[in-house]
Length: 255
Image (cartoon, rainbow, N blue to C red; front, top):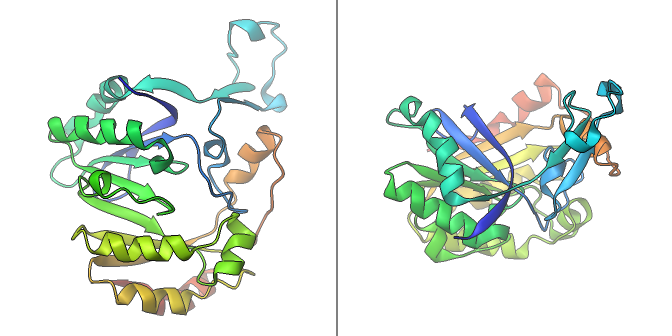
């Protein structure tokens, strides 16, 4: 069986799709967003996150850190092993919940993601994906019940400056995804000070019949402490005010 590198399996998630979900975070992403709240998911390799303030100087580092000062980020698991953890949540899914494959960019580990999706389908577990749409594989994506996809910035040059890649492919993949007749929840993280073109993104998405919802998500700084624990350079942005988010509501919609 294919093995994947998993950073976390988050149980009882209410923010990664409909209902109560189990979110499986896969390691590795070709984007490097300056505001990333999951910086531990960018590298494709296992990493160590260090929190020196938690160290109790027990001298047992080689046995594993018991205080949380040294955290190994990345577990090598088969899809069946992931399913064993998912099974603990199944009784809570009801009619709407299920599994969300996230990251990082889950399609960067597409063979593992595909196997995990197949296993969920075999078990009649609803399966969704959170993706940047930098990659497109119709055979995998059409197996999903719905897809959450980001369009972060409209202008490709600005997109590249803040994420490391242009967005021409992402826009084209939105159009291709729209043709698969799968519900799409589109998202934009709201980053004050960045010229994102949210009005243009909203108009583009309104032209795609299978985009059922467009969500604007306020930036939060939760990734900063994790980036520091990885000894990675980090950029901090302002948290958008409630007034600013209210002003942007006119661009969000639900069909």
